[in-house]
Image (tube, rainbow, N blue to C red; front, side, top):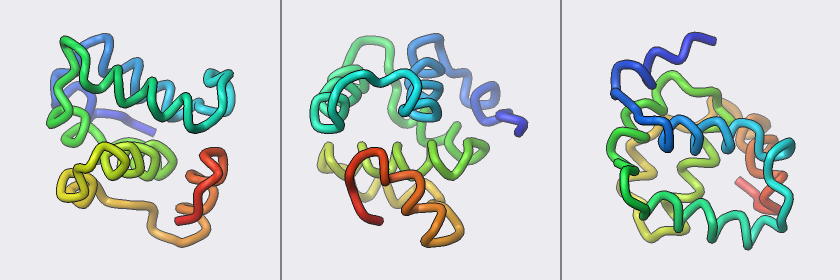
Length: 105
């Protein structure tokens, strides 16, 4: 998949790392989903992370990344931002993306 959204949004290394970690949650995250969610949110509030640019870049990310980023934004009390990201096209896609979080779509 071409991830031109990352380039077009001029993401920095931290922002790219967040998207990569969302993509490979099952490979990279070694703590429970609650702890991981807290850590992702802390990272998203950190210096150098521009959430608006993550949202812009999401347009060319996989359904898994888009759904997980939408989930994090909702957990952060930002449902309007979450709604700016297209979700997975199917319920099965949403279910697959969120299953590792122990959440239903």
